[in-house]
Image (tube, rainbow, N blue to C red; front, side):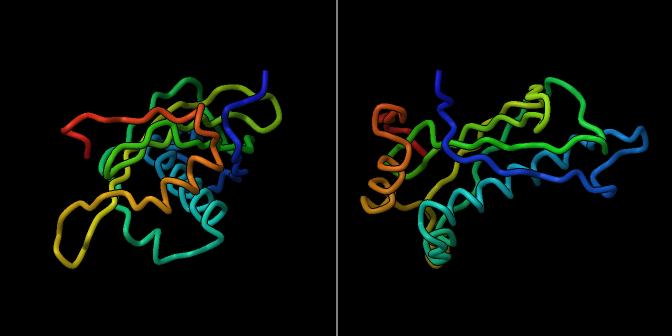
Length: 149
């Protein structure tokens, strides 16, 4: 079965990523997700930074499955799993590059945001279209809930 994750980012564990027990510190994994988000955005929008600047992170969560150490090289897999009126959700998997061992699974919610007027805005149709073309429309849930972020 083919993976639903079309984008994979290789991450080298740095000495500064480790805690006192030589494991990757829990908070550092969120930095790995941030790297993946940046690469995803650059990949599907061909580096258009202005579009990325209209997005704000509203929520991030991560379930830890196994430890990573300085001996590991990691891969962050990322995909858009849901699109709403003004938000979209990324789903992530962090795995060991060599053995495929599941390290963590998570998700984040991003909201299109007007920083000048300090409020959320609708997800532009052009952004929606590019995401759905990249992911495949059948692979992305559409949210029609009034409380959509």
